[in-house]
Image 1 (tube, rainbow, N blue to C red):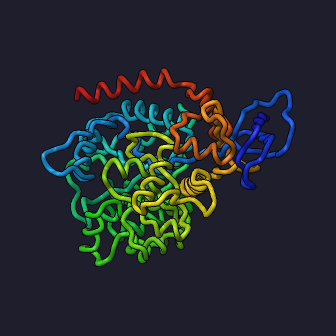
Image 2: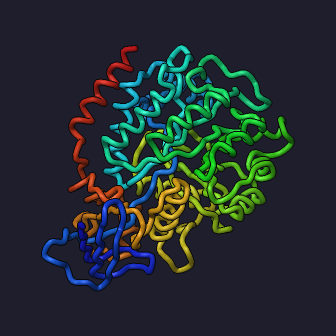
Image 3: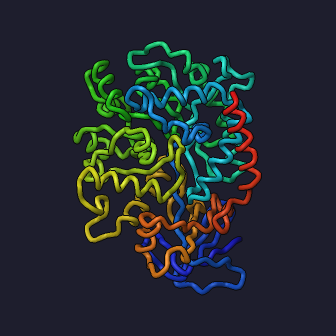
Length: 442
């Protein structure tokens, strides 16, 4: 067994001194507080439960930064999507794996120990299935294994261009499947990964297909884009007479296994109802800001809804960065400070603990806490980057004062990052450079 000794650590009971965490394989065997370090212990200044990244499209890391040029018309998510389609149509399996490797290294170095990969690249560039239907899903799992990040693989069902079961567009051909093909894909993926099911969105999945997908999910997580853009809300109302979150709550058994990705444009009633359902809201604050999507409804937080954060389009990777953007958006909307803190409490602590719990719930991963029996997803911080800070002040300064403080990261009991550097950073970066150069030439 391995033992880690932290001078201070954030436990479910709060901050504690001299915390000795014993690991047995992938899990935490015991947590002792006010315990002396043993000679063989690995010593660190400060320990935290590591967060899970609850929403990622790995291949989009290859195009990060390339959509920042204004076109002739107003730029929105819908214009950004055209560049995404171009990359989706030309990336090959080797490039998918190389890009995912780079992304997962960056996630681990940022302090994420696990990721939910919302994986919708299924087909060959011409739209036909690969001989191995799960070829690209296997490449995602291979990248997770290479980098050591925990993975919840979410194969995506995508069948239609918009509401009312409209036929898909030609540029969506790498995403498209039918229920029979998807069921076979899902079964194949269960052989090599922990999986959930991801109906892409109400615009891409017809109601009878959603019912079938819920059955296919079994006891696994269910993630779905919902209410990301105003146009999506307007189109949903035109199709059904209801807003997207309301339609979903009225027509599906939404509960704790569900993660509503974005859930940006909820009215107050929807926000309160989603919070009451026990589902997790999967906020992706940096992507939502980058795409100009909007800001989450404050009523969801007021109703104590469960939430986590994801990096979505992967234009920037950072635990602190996502949490800061989430809080700052609320400050701008409300024109007040410390919007998501408890009364008299630390904003960083409130954000971090909520995102740790919500992310773990969304991934179906027994993590997000330093406690016996939990998966050993742990991050240590380098306090030289946070001088003269104590306990909650450390979280506040890491998140809001641009401190690059991640020292070590363990995922499932294995240390993948040491001194802020992933063990495979150089080799992965070289392959990533070749992949993006190849994509740029195509």
